[in-house]
Image 1: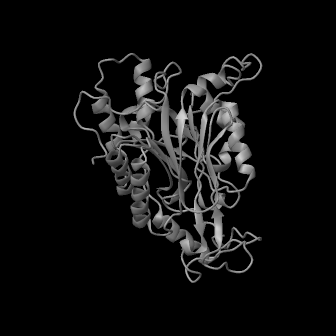
Image 2: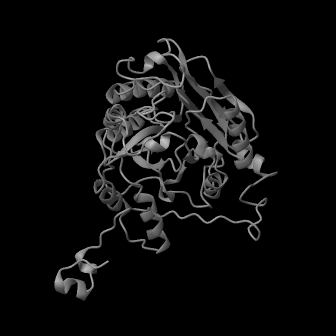
Image 3: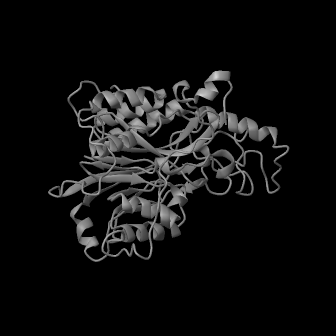
Length: 394
């Protein structure tokens, strides 16, 4: 299954939503599955094999959308302090932590940038109707490096004909990001969301996302987007997704506390959307043995069968009804049929960015441009003065 589309006459990829777009209102239900399963830690090929088995099983149930937990590919480093204890020394980080990060970095994957959607929207706004969008899509994706894992995940989505939402640890250079990747049933990578605000010790190992990777995709199933774990507690970030018309709100997480269910119910009611929250279920034995991986924060070293994350994956309707889950019993596929008509019925009473908004009093501005630490201009754009002496000007 190729990652890039071929031919020149078909729609190249699913664009970000326009506010007058959306799901086919004649469609009645979407079958969705959230996966509750553990990473094969430090073994990305084995994790991808496990992902394919789970996708195949979900597709066998007739699922059209499959959502995986936070950091499923690459792993969520529960119990690891990366050499830092209560007293953090920035001048002398422990060598053990550096080695742990090196192994964690090796398990991460390379992911292309979110370029296509923004270019597509810009071109539409400029009414450049003569552009061959398929050619543009191929150009934009091929100029970015797509690691083999992204190609593999795209192939899985195409093979099993599902929309796939996958939590990964993304590697860009020597910095890691906690990200969610989106794929369509034609085997195409759509784009990504990078976690904007890592929590607590996550800030030691993960970089921060920006406003350029908070997409919502307009698909035949509905408008699909995602926020990761405690990002879902950020009201303004949620509002950005509501403003893009999100209908199927994916919430990959590492939070298994009972109070998480309250947050998911609130978001479903607030956004008038379906909420699909996927978490891992893992035991100590799902991580490397104590000689290779230290488990801190639980007192003494846990036994192999000790549950270190009990899951709690759940699917909730726009009316706040729990459709499936929460599951705390083990690895599972949690599946529900989403009645898409319920979205309109819920928003009759409360539409947070529609009739219930007060933009003359409260409004939100989102900077959706990428922010890079280093920018280069091409030689043709340099001023004559800069060209004359060959010296780069600030």
